[in-house]
Image 1 (cartoon, one colour):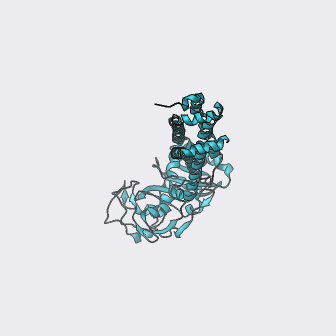
Image 2 (image 1 turned 30 degrees about the horizontal axis):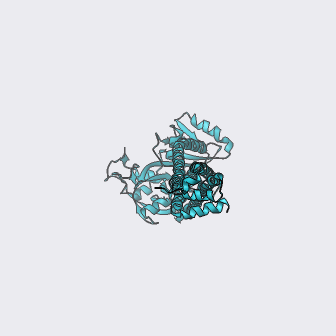
Image 3 (image 1 turned 135 degrees about the horizontal axis):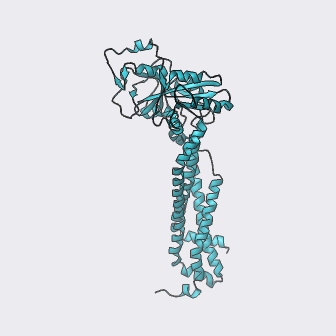
Length: 420
């Protein structure tokens, strides 16, 4: 009988232990491959959050800070931009379009973004996808709001529902604009980006809810203008938080960036989204490497389980080894048999782990992208998965040499003698 069928029958004879070992190896390999898939998905999601925008302009601070609050709705701006400065940049001959952004308010923990309808036209994500409405329409009335998919799902909102915005960005606010409620006019389709977690209103609406407010406090409720009065007021914004810029030619990006960064009227900062995203990912790379290291150690524990399983069963198999030797098996046959067993356990276990992981990702990938914004790029096993299977199998073969060498040295009489 050749070694492979003999190894399979030997493993079947110890199927309970072999099954547990397969499960250990499969889970550890699935964890390693899963971490890599999620790492690639997270990187792709970061890079695909905003596309088609050539520059992001805000008050002078740092590239990451500007990127985080303007795109990812994390943190606060160090300062605002005056409206004349925005108009000066927007009026440059090499600028094709601009989208102003005004932040600072929230609704039940979700950030509120004041902008124009150009936002729905020019904002791109993923592979150049534009924002689409799943229900309703963009804001037309002063107190209309367009909410992201996650806002609607989490809070159970529908088109036509009334909502109240809060002053500040905390999840709990004691300063609400309850006298000026908004109506949900539209719900955006899921994008897997921070847009899903944003409440969008018009720039005049941001000005309207702050009429009669100073330093975060309502001055007087009795003299505050009514909602109808606000609709007839000229609500030109004095300041905005940041704005997106699209250029007529990509070649003008560095020239416009230099002009904005050296703008004499006030300190401004223009960043190229792709460059800032790369910088952000390099900062997050430490956590990425830590997760990968943990997954590698888990695979090491799985391989250690193969070694422990074979060493603990070696004493029980002394008679089996001796019988094989007595019927003509050479010492190297015994050595090769044990190495084959450990190799089979690793090969089958790692293959099952990779297969199970990709089946799970295939079944739940769309839900994961919608809920967490992680776009999994590989629909099936790739070169990394094959490399992991090959590496784990090779490592198991080397590990199997330890109990195989011990069995190799056992004499025939040692296994056939009566043990007391």
